[in-house]
Amino acid sequence: MKVKVISVLEDNYMYLIIEESTRHAVAVDAAVPKRLLEIIRKEDVSLKAILTTHHHWDHARGNVELAQLYPDLEVYGGDERVGALTHPVSHNEELKFGSINVRCLLTPGHTSGHVCYFVWEDDSPDAPAAFTGDTLFIGGCGRIFEGTAEQMYKNLTEVLGPLPQETKVFCGHEYTARNLKFALKVEPENDIVKEKLTWAKLREDEDLPTVPSTLAEEFFYNPFLRVLEKSVQRFTGKADPIEVFAALHKAKDKFRKPKEGLNPQAMVALELGLFDPLLEKK
Ligand SMILES: [Zn+2]
Picture 1 (cartoon, rainbow, N blue to C red):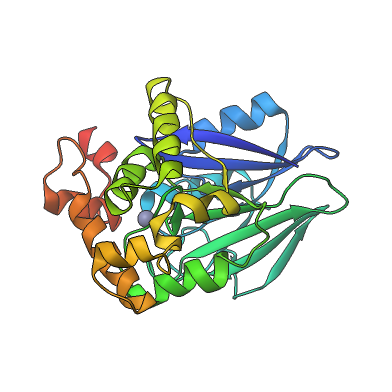
Picture 2: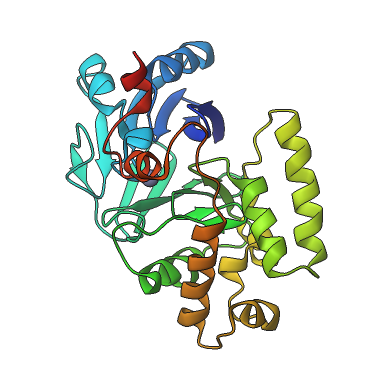
């Protein structure tokens, strides 16, 4: 199975999962149809379904337009607010697209209906992949708009953490360098954080994606997966894992850089999907 990484908008990722023997494809977070259609043409594949991680406009905006173009298109998601939804999914539900298998993992927190997708191919030597949307980022974790720190902690430690360690992590945004700067603040002595940050900055300079990482790697530098480490506990001044996680999350919220040209209220509105600044400009 091939995963095509497609950078869109300021820092979002769309993905196209391709079954190479049939050239059938499943999209993840089809936010920009025009760009997706270009890639579909270039790769010469036929689009069968969309997996949507959550309803925010920068992940789901293209669903309605694509559903009109492809009347048989299946649209999966965990939230009635997902545009053109045809198949609401439940936790651990398994889907099959030819030889491609998908397990839907409900991960409430960023939004109440957020879903991560664990994907693997039958009889393939390729490592499985997890499409983690705005739940697990490389070196970080998503903001909590519709849930609790405890839910997000469980998403990371009980739902995503136990997946096979070689699983490739494909997340919803390119926030890696910024996340690792925060990780370094949390663990100034962690050499793996330093190395990954140096690498992420180089990728940023060359305008190249930092996805995918692997789950095994994340456990070495992502502070949100390291709440049992003494260094992370020391940074937060807490010992209970959920309290460490919550304190870490709060500290990260303060560390965030507001998007250029947007005031803090607009930034929150944008992340909540209340308006689309690209449409506003037209
Ligand atoms: Zn979002």
